[in-house]
Each structure stands twice: as structure tokens, then as C-alpha cells.
Amino acid sequence: MTHSLNAYARYLGASYHTKLVASTGFAIERPLLDAWSASQDLIVTRTAIGNVNIGFHELVQIFHANPHWISDAEVLDYMTTLPSLRTLADLNVVLHPPGVLGMVLHSPIESGMTRAELEEASEREYMPYRDFLRHDGGLDDHRASPLPLAHPDDLAEGVPCLMGLMWRTRATESLDRYVAARVAEIAFGSDDHHSVLRPLRDSGEVYSTISRYLFDIDVFIVGVIGTYSPSKYFRVLKVLHNLDNIGAVLDHAKATFSSRLRMSDSHIPLHRIGTYLTLDPDTNDDAILGLANQVSSDQILEIVMGRSFPLLKKVDGHGIQ
Image 1 (cartoon, helix red, strand yellow):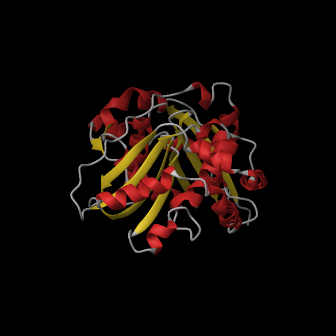
Image 2 (tube, rainbow, N blue to C red; image 1 turned 120 degrees about the vertical axis):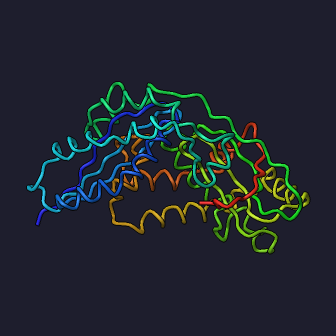
């Protein structure tokens, strides 16, 4: 039996509001799409992907168990009948970004703010994904203003919280900077045994370490999760402000990054490589691994140079995702 996997995209908008509302709408309609797909011997996924500096788009992936049963054109026609791009905007609900991203942003997202962009998006036609990325009116024509970052919480001693720093970065300017940011995640505080913040966890002072490049909003965060005390908070900041030893953990970080990519098939599936393709339509697994091996200490430090913002947020019932 012949199988096929094809991908298509259409532009959503420049605002993170638009991306969050679209993603939530897609999740609400997922049972409906799954039921229809199963009846057609298909697997269809849709997601919102992109960044505030390069714009957001809808990515649709179609896996045919039997390509002769139904065409991609018929699947995309069905997709346009789903109202998810308008549903939440019309309801004008307040959305909270999940996990760390929600803690970093200054305030929740009002879905009604993005109604005009979503109405325009719902009228656009899908294009093959690689053609979309190479299109003259592509993602780089759309840029949004940076979202305001949250102020530190005023915490009492003993309260569970996330303590650390965050930086605005421009890791979406090129593929090599983006790969460097992903390697930096591992080098700083990903719970990897060789990460910069690992000694704080091994000492028992904190529950966990965390580092994320938040691709959607171009913010890099590094910190620990533990109970708050002023002395502990300042120890974390001292480590992050003295990064002369970053080179000592870099080789381990690059090796870890490369091994995680190799754990899949020899060719990275499209759903795993989507953010890389957003930055460079011609990228492939060999290109990513090559760039990872070339990451230098200077690149890592450049990502976190400049003005930093304190990250001190209470961990509430939503937890860290």
C-alpha cells in the first residue's frame, strides 16, 4: 500500500494574539477533524506556528493511508468549512498562554483583539508548505511589536516559584542563531547533568532547573524551580551573571542536541522540523546537525547579552509545562 505525507500552509497574522486564539480554536475542533479524517482513512493535523518577528501561519499535514481514496484538494476544501479561525474571536474570551509562556507574559490575551486578522486568514487559500515559505509575500514581511514581559512577583519566603532571568533575543534572524539558542537551552539549565545550573539541583536547593527559548515571542529564559528565599534567588542570579565557564558545558550540550535529533528516523519528519523550515525552507537534518556542531561560546553568550529581565514568578495551580 502506498502512503503519503503532504503539508500545506496559509498566513494567519503578525500578532501572538492571533496565534494563541487560532491554536485554541484548533484544539477545540480537534475531535471533529479527527472523526472526519478517520472516516476518510486519513490523519490530518493542523497547528499554528511562527514568531512575532516573522509572522504566524497555519500548518496542515495530511497523511494518506490510501492516496487514491481522497485528494489533498478535497481535504483542504473540508478544512475551510471549519469555523475555528473565527469561533473564539467572536466569543471575545480571555485566554491564558500555557506553562512558562503564560508566566513570562505581562497579561492574558483577549481573543477579540485579533478578530480582523482571523477573518482575513479564513479567506486565504492553502499553499504547499515549502512554496509558502518561499513565497515573495512571505513571513519576513510581517513583524509585530514585542509583547510586554511580566514584572517579578512579590513573594514570601517558602513559596514555590520560578527564579532566574529572561532576555529578549533575535534568534529568529537566521537558522544558525536558532540552532544556537536550542543548544543554549541544554547548556544552561535543562536538567542535563552538565548544565550550568545543575549544581544547584544536585545540592538539593531547588526542585528542578529550566531553560527555554520561547520561539513564539523571541524570549530566552533560564531559572530554577524551588521555594523562594532571597539568598537562594541571589545565588541563581550570581551563577547566571558569571558565565565564564560556559565553554566547559558546551561540548556536552552539542552532543546531547545532536543525539536527540538522531533518535528519530534518518530524515527528520516535517512535524519535528517545522520551526527550522520557517527560518530556512531548504534546511534538512544534516544542515541542522552541522550547525549544532559549529555552535561556539561566543554565540551562546550573544544570545543572553544585553539587558536582562528578572524572572521571579509564583508557580500556581497550572504548573510548568
